[in-house]
Image 1: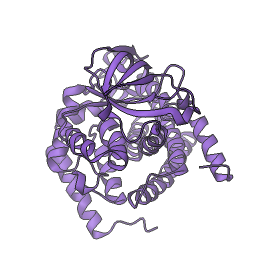
Image 2: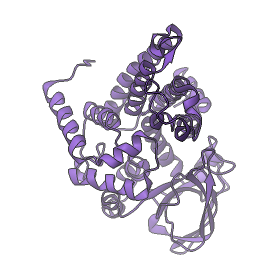
Image 3: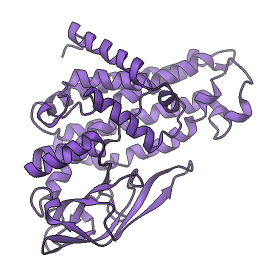
Length: 399
């Protein structure tokens, strides 16, 4: 695999850099750099900017309105977006639901829902996890009973990211309780404004409202909102999860985070020398950089293979495990590099105290990012479960 960029790819990188310089609002990039909340309005604004350029859906086929970039182009864009502190696009509609609709949805569903994802008419959230069904997703209990032209849905979903902003949710529901768990699940598209739906916030350790519980009480869902066939939802769910796990790898964001760690470590003093000169710390930085470069290469290879015809298989689990380990290691290095400056709310107390130390504004969100990203090895299928999948497939026990 040739890892050097061609002239065309270098030209594309220059185009992306120019776009980020000219079109990414400074106040938006400053918020991302400082770890501040962007909010729904900011997310929608960046969504519209990318859509106006035709770059919102890099992995979509052109026939659906996507950019249809190859793996290298997508890698370049992700790397430059992270380097310029661009917001990460909310993935639920664009990167999770859309591939399912494009592969399994009806022509009517594709024609209606895909344009609405692009133009921002719909904000989607994901209705997978339940209080008793996380990594063991097939044990879900949210029930959908056919009643004429509708399904009647009852149950609960949890850890619903940004559900407080969403007007639509794609859900896994049990439509046949009398068969093997995986064989009785269906994939429904549900309007969040339907009577009987209640969203309750879950406040995180850092005080933010990112995730929610969603309750369904006799919620009526039109039958035409069933994706694919009834009781075949597990197939669609697995397809979606492979795309989710590939996205979790977050190569560009890891690279941007690593650059931040290096910058802080060059400014922070330890024993009269920059922290970066400490052999132990430097060795940890070097190891994570080696791991990141190796994963970036694998990521490009897997994305390229997926673009040629299908969702990645066990490779997605590999990316999910390694990608989350790398991101958590970078978070830990940043936290250790800033020392007491990582303490929550400490930035106001220490501002301007020593110009040789890390920018307190940059250090402020380090602890929150460290704690929040402990979730990376849990959501999307916990790393322990993914290791089991990898072992089973690689040893010839399944797919």
